[in-house]
Every structure is written in structure tokens, then in C-alpha cells.
Amino acid sequence: MIVVGSGVIGLTTAVVLAERGHSVLVRSREPAGRTTSAVAGALWWPYRIRPEDRVGDWSLESFAVYGELADRPEETGVRMVEGVHEGGRLDGLGAWAADVPELRVATASECRSGEGLWARLPLIDMPTHLRWLGARLAAAGGAVETGTVTSLASLAGSSGEARVVVNCAGLGARDLVPDPAVRPVRGQLVLVENPGVDTWYTGPESPSGGSTYFFPQPGRLVLGGTAQEDDWSTEPDPVVADAIVRRCAAVRPEIAGARILGHRVGLRPVRDAVRLERVRLPGGGTVVHHYGHGGAGVTVAWGCAREAADLVESGDA
Image (cartoon, rainbow, N blue to C red; front, side, top):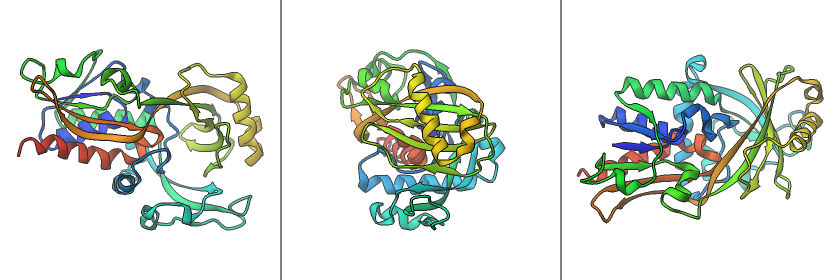
């Protein structure tokens, strides 16, 4: 079968399918290292994703996997790191929060505003993690190739290349399906030399779409961010970058003098709800749609991938 898309959703789904014994080829218009997933800050947390009644299970299943992968951080890119969600409240979270170990109300010394949540969560170095996923896929017999997909129907069915196609195209699904419900939410980041920050931090979003967060990653500190709806620009805005640094430095003053290493922009593939369903095409082929994860693709990747694989196999019964 063919999996369209080489971001974290596509590669994780391909790994699950290949390890269940399926012959899997991932096809993507760009390599994994150039996807939106590659520039993500990648803190595990259900963020901008629906439906709420399914997100909790997907997230917790993924949390369990990342907990195991954190035993090999240099290989997998996954670490368990402490930090604070300033402004967060336990009663504002879903039922899933009760099953997150060590999630609690932050103490006054841990949170500058006096209200927030402290947690030890998976924090993922995405370039490393994507390479690890690719290697794990190859070990299971799968392969990745670069190529443009213009039609799902041309890939699936008796006259296509595969009996089943799994559509993990992310924002590309807007044109490929087509599905105009998929739209971009632009996120801009600043990478700086880490001045000694070893905990993550997130603050409340402003009405304008600006937010404050920083994530210590190997060799860098990732500063953010933005959530600009329907903005397709992938060029870093220097004015936005300066504002990001100022907001983060207001929380940790040492960030103000940190040397800037680079700038990153990613377009989150947001949809009113994740589309995860099996569809029979008029020509006889089958597509399992698996897209619309917004800014929480990493958070739900393993839970969603296993459900997508179940949908693939439901047609074999």
C-alpha cells in the first residue's frame, strides 16, 4: 500500500502498518526533514485538535509509547522534561488529564503568575525523531520515495499502484482530496543558543495569535510563537521574531542575550476535526483518510496511526 505524506503522522502510520506485516511505500512531495513536522517545537500536549471525545485516547496511547522511547533519547529524539503551563487549570482539561503521571497544580515558586500546571512530558527533537522513524520503517521492510501525488484515485484500485492508499497529506489534503476545511495556522519560531534553560514553558495565547513558549532541545532553545490563521507565508518575519524573543525574555531574562541560530516557520494543518475514515472510491480503490491534526500531530501520532491501521485491515476481514 501507499502512504501519502512523510510528516510525523505519515511516517508513524507507515511504521505501524509495516510492523503489522503490510508492504508499505511512503510517497511525499518533500523529504521528512522539510515537512512541517521537522520544525515543530514538539511538546506532547493535546493542542488545537478535535474531536475531543477521541483525542484523549489517542494522546494517552502516544504518551505511553514516548515514555518507552525516552529511554533512548539520542536514538529516538524523545526525552521526558519538566515544565509549566502558565495559566493552565486542571478543571479546564479533558478526562485524559487524570491519566497523565505527575501532572499537578504548579507551586507559587514554579509559576510566576501563581496559576498554572506543572508536568513532566515528552519533548521531542523532531529532526532526530523523523530520522529514527524512517530507519524503523526501513527495518520493517518499508520504503520512502519523493514524488508528487496529484490524484488519490490514480493510486488506488485495480488500475492504480496500490489496493489501499492512506492519505496523510496534512495541509496538502486541501487540494488533493480536495478538502477546503483544511487550512493553515502559521507558526513562527526562533532558535537560539541555550543560555542554561532546562525546563519548558508555555504561556496563554493572546487574542492576536501571539504566544510565549520555549522548549530546550539538544543544541538549541526553541522560542515561540504564533498561531496565525489562514496565513500561508513560510518566510520568517523579523518583527514577529523580535517580539517572540522579547516575550520569552520577559519570563527568563537570560534569553535576551542568547545568540540567534536561526528562524523556522511551519504551517499547521488545522481542521474542525481530524478526518480518520475509510472511503471506497468510485473506481474500486480504497482510501483511508488520516489528516487534520493541527498542532498536535506529535501528541496523537501513535494512537491515531494504530486506528488508521485498524481501518486499513477492516477491509481484509
